[in-house]
Length: 326
Image (tube, helix red, strand yellow):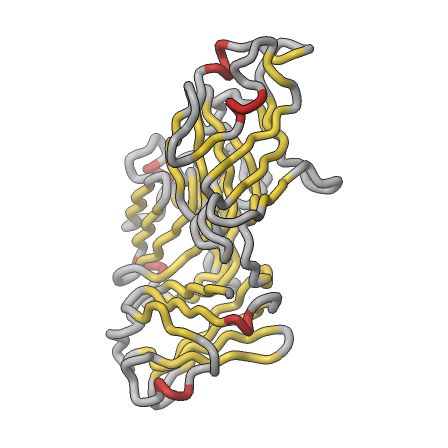
């Protein structure tokens, strides 16, 4: 059964009234979900369960969404005084299994798998990770059973650094202590198997023909990935994602008048920020406060890592959608 989460702000305290209805637009039609504590609660899509309905999160479980593709999401108040759209770009396929999107090395001897539903897959949370190496060790430490990493009780020398719904990070000093065979150098992780210990399902992620998941365990860092953008306080947007501190700047658009670069207010380029703007950067959250954002609908944010105005946006670093700034 499929879970879908919609995040934002002011779902309960919007000036024009609380959000009572969430509508998901699909390629095949639409689904309606209502606040379980509201007067229209009984009108929710049959078979669906409202898991959470709070100020910042609406989460539903709906078996009928399995295999569907979401194109847009709308939130409305009880009297339909407003209807706020969110364009899901690219369209989101509703999947029930864990999905790997990239592999990177955030620190020496450390490998990170980035994706979705590592905790919320229908079959259960991922309990085992089996990294695939392009070359194996010349010794025995990175071979055989020791490569089956039980996340609840990692084998010798393995450390579970983090395990969230969107990333699993593992470290092992043997990536340095052992040499790859037959060619010495950095180990390369180019695939993985994920396993739910309470089920019999094993998910294999080998390098597909058109996408390369290969990455050396060299600790050069992971590229930033922007997952979502939502309004914050007055004149403010909040960007969520991973490794957002591995950037030089953020480029923000509204499709009409705004095309602006923002820099960490504590970084070396803080003086390049627009007058009056404040930018706070952490690995997972970036807050941009700028009076120029007031009343705009932000439609695109790019996390830039280069130094030239036209540098290439890293894969996965760009966000499309709509965030109306109060």
